[in-house]
Image 1 (tube, rainbow, N blue to C red):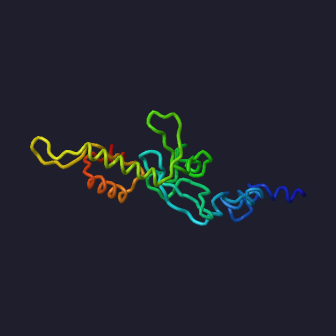
Image 2 (image 1 turned 180 degrees about the horizontal axis):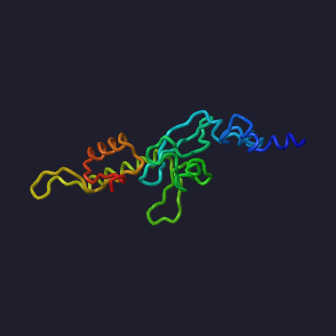
Image 3 (image 1 turned 90 degrees about the vertical axis):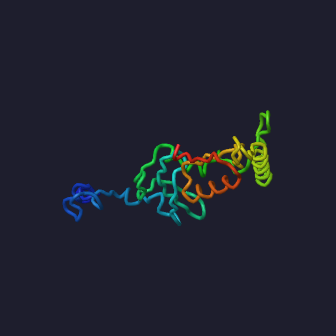
Length: 188
């Protein structure tokens, strides 16, 4: 490499002699950085989402390629977080693609010490049966000579990442079941 080529490779020289006097574009790039591509540049689509951890509701961009999540980053368009994520939110990719993630229903019997896999239909039937039984056992027709027609056998506490539509449907479902103890974590 000659001296002229060597000096021409310096960012400061390129900044003063080229079209980038502030050194924020091409003048600041080396040959190595020219070859680097963003890890999200190969994504097929970007899906807007909300961080699943706390009640802040930071926006996330979920990058998908071939139907699989490849990267999750802060959403710069989010008025809540403006592209920033906490350490837990930054690790959301591990939540979706980590090797420790379970993709099956696990059940531990009462007084049991081991988890056993269940098929989804069995688990859903167990949940429905328990809801119906809790409703039946906790049903109140009257209280203090007032007709109440309600159950105190179960309650609902919604998560912070539920949107208005999901909260609306949950409220309708639990009200139809007779529950009166319905709340959302975002308000607590």
